[in-house]
Image (cartoon, rainbow, N blue to C red; front, side, top):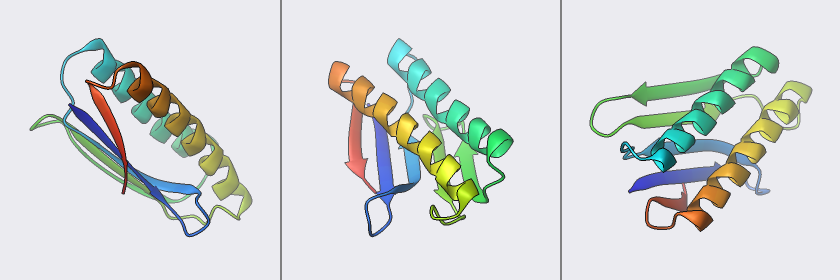
Length: 105
């Protein structure tokens, strides 16, 4: 089962996430695409600073932390992309509860 942990700042804004235990189903592929596209979008479009770690072995793992405050313009844009990613993950978890679990980080 894929696990997606979402980290939020004190006012509830998404600032980090971890995704682990990828498999080979269509849900896993969708989650991978959503997460990787979000990281790529933040890198290409926002100039926000972040840290990212991934490991494709042992079921797959990706960890992301936004280091730019969400109050800054570049952090606001990155935050919006993170919010959209979380909406997609929540939708996938609702439709496929046996394949994706969401939790707080």
